[in-house]
Amino acid sequence: MSELAAEKIATRADTGHSISFGEAFRVWLRVALLSFGGPAGQIAVMHRILVEEKNWISESRFLHALNYCMLLPGPEAQQLATYIGWLLHRTAGGIMAGGLFILPGVISIMALSWIYAAYGNVSFIEALFFGLKAAVLAIVIQAVVRVGKRALRNRVMISLAAVAFVAIFFFNIPFPVIIIAAAVIGYVGARSGRPEFAAVEHGDGKNAAAVDSMLGDELPEHVRPSVPRALRVSAVWLLLWLLPVLALLIALGPDNVFSQIAVFFSKMAMVTFGGAYAVLAYVAQQAVEHYHWVRAREMLDGLGMAETTPGPLIMVLQFVGFMAAFRDPGTLPPMLAGTLGGLLATWVTFTPCFLWIFLGAPFIETMRGNKGLAGALTAITAAVVGVVLNLSIWFALHTVFRQTVPVRSFGLWFDMPAWSSLDIAALVLAIAAATAIFRFNVGMLTVLAGSCVAGVALRLIGVI
Image 1 (tube, helix red, strand yellow):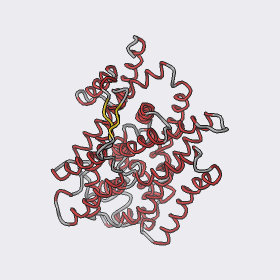
Image 2 (cartoon, one colour; image 1 turned 135 degrees about the vertical axis):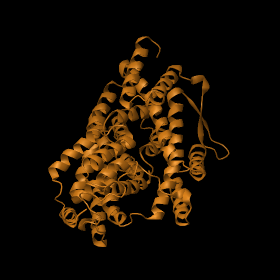
Image 3 (cartoon, one colour; image 1 turned 90 degrees about the vertical axis):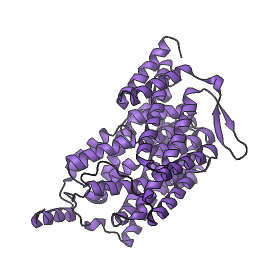
Image 4 (cartoon, helix red, strand yellow; image 1 turned 180 degrees about the vertical axis):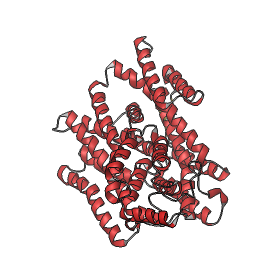
């Protein structure tokens, strides 16, 4: 690269005018509308558009941002969009990118929640979601395989995944404890020079050494960390996040469903590490077994909605908040209460995501290439494989069995299937969906649509 070109890139990065805000808006909207397929698909879409097509950010910087987002609680794909938007256009760019990323999902899930609440007991809708759940089970299993292939590269990583699975499935160890332990192990292992904890690569790395065409190697001025700025960011985003929660607690009391939604999903936003599937394992257990907001099968229906709409899979939390308030509306009309409950769950879930990025990203940008951070990420990724395996088994139990038997003795805490309640039709559909995905490499949306059609057909012929 010539000195003139390098100077031009650096100047553009410092001024923030290399990409117009209107152009960025159009690109981020395109990313949002194409963000199907869970975090793996969403990250792939961003990589293709931002790194390969637009050349807005280099491979190395993209992967560094992704590594940080995978260490955070919450949806890593949405946070990655916020991070890159912030790099390119400061805070306004981060809000635009992160906000647009979830907007199509907010609209879609709200519409489907209204339909589900109004017509969920109609036989056609029940049959449609019956087929949907079988496909979702196959997709969750595919997530285990994909993450496992990348993360479990040696015996140490396999052991971490196995211990994580046993801890959460058989002993109900809290997920944050597992993640923190894995992070500590990974950090110590990497700092001690153990090769097993080397960073997990994403992509083919062909552009890893490339210079960002829009950012350059130097840190733009707005990226440089400072304590006064960190304090301002913390104050603004903590108020945006927690002020509505405190207002609800004071006005309605802690036992009101809106207060419970605000508090629960705020806590969830702080402790659910490891991506969408790990988040759903935590939420499903609490929403189904503790709060009784939704039934286990309804949780699967909600995940099916999130799988078939653009945006993060964690948008299923909007469905959970909707159903919780819909069933306990107080003096409000049920649909209005459900709408407010869904939007409240979305607000307290995603507002902290902007806090984590705007507060931490400037410091993380100065730590590119840090060995300890990479080791922590590697170990966390391995532990998440065990957690996602736990989730897939939980889904399987509640998809192909109508009842489960709880085991609560000798320190064990898990559910066993009631074999007499085996649902043959659900099992056959799940096997068919898995075969389409693994054997014939059929696309996710095609499998979901086919499973829905199969569910309706089974209802029409009287099988379910």
